[in-house]
Image 1 (cartoon, helix red, strand yellow):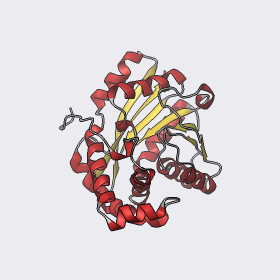
Image 2 (cartoon, rainbow, N blue to C red):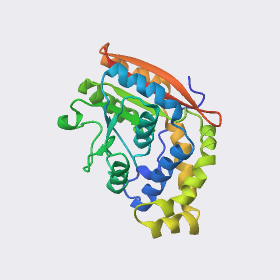
Image 3 (cartoon, rainbow, N blue to C red):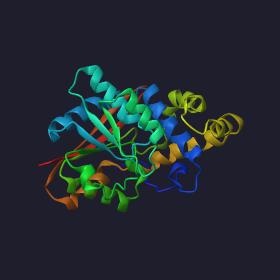
Amino acid sequence: MAPWPRAQLFEWNDLSRVPDAVRDTIVESLSRTLEWGHMLDGLVAPFARFLDEVGTREVLDIGAGAGGPARILARAFIASGREPVRFVLTDLHPRVEAWTAARAELPAAIAFEPSPVDATAVPPALAAGRTRSIINVFHHFPPELASAVLRDAVRSGRGVFISEAFERNPLAFARFSLAGLPALYANPWLTERDRLAKMALTWLTPAALGMAIWDGVVSTLRVYDERELRAMVAPFGDGHHWVYGRYPYFPGGEGYFFYGVPA
């Protein structure tokens, strides 16, 4: 059992009235934190194992954000000589500029859907032949919505892979600071849009830092543990085989993965 109770508190980047510059600052900085901190290196092997078991290299990435996890994993597959993987990025708030840059870097590995995609009702044409990845996003869904997301993925019949960069402990977020602070403060230079607004948020006020810390700590309190995940998929019966595991990253961090493969 997780040592902390789960709390469905708000995150700034979830609020519909938050300006795009705020939401993008948090999401873009997180993508660079994962990349600069090498926080997904340990996820490559279990993700490759999942793709082998499900029998496809076509992946529909749910809640893709700025595209960081998909880009990191796609590059890792290419560098390791593994069979290439192709991600189709989707989100309720598409970030077309960032996704276009990712596709330009990795044209064979990255595509995207420019329209908003509801993860509880993915269009059949978009889902066909693709498995699903939900990387560092699943904690954003409250239990009812999380169950609906899993239900739609199971209904598609091609499996689903979930991962989070930490388990439920707010102290774990401190490990993000080594890469997270540089990523946050470099973001206004590296962003694709709203540069002046992001400079003001990040460099002239403590707003970006405060909101990023809040969202990070809240994220750790929202994360589902293994017992809760298995309870969510129990109503689906024996149609899928579900696997839970952990992966390490420096310094002393540990994330988890949870995936389902059609039986």
